[in-house]
Length: 298
Image 1 (cartoon, rainbow, N blue to C red):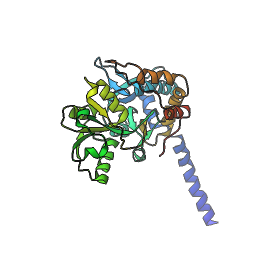
Image 2: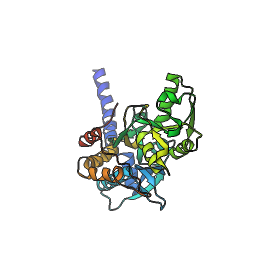
Image 3: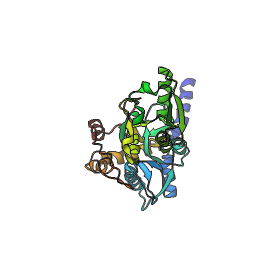
Image 4: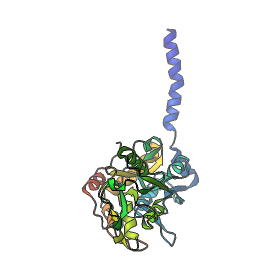
């Protein structure tokens, strides 16, 4: 009888606590509702996903998807208006900014993997790419093994530099890894002959090559350092209510004709400011991912 009473007393204390926890609002939605502001993280130079044009406009494929997210959040919170605060983020600062709440959604090209899911949340995937490298054609670098003993650049805080270090150890290539603050700096090292290669996401390298004064100078590797991995929008870890609002907004776009129009705009057409055109058709795998959006958990 004493044990039964103790158990019932414990349940009596736990039940209100559990109910309160269940009713706790999303910290992100709570902050947005109270301030009337949503903070979006963007990149200064990561076309076609997220970048700032010379006239100061912040744009890109990921930014347009985030525009749809902003409207979905406004409707969810029943707000008349919702102000957007744009916060610059880099490969090195993006996770800190999301974890600290200074960014509500990071709208760029961030790879989703198991290690990162321990510290941030990811939306449904909105693109997928493998890690490749760019070299100068004149250097005749045909395969990964040709990088042995050379200097290779990679941006700090990316999965690419981790993959480069792992490959270097595994194959004992004696590569001199050159960490940089961002992609443009690393690409310049290759263009100037100070690095033999730059390791990054294939799609982002293709964009940098297309923007170069003479794209024919460079070669994008056919070798890859990873299988294709998905990009996702970043949100705060554990805030499932907010993540569900983000995912619902993306699903509405992905499963409608709008996604074909958006993709054509950013990957099959000239984009600002200089008319770069990647001419990259949507892959069957990406089409399938858009048709049935789901969390990437590998």
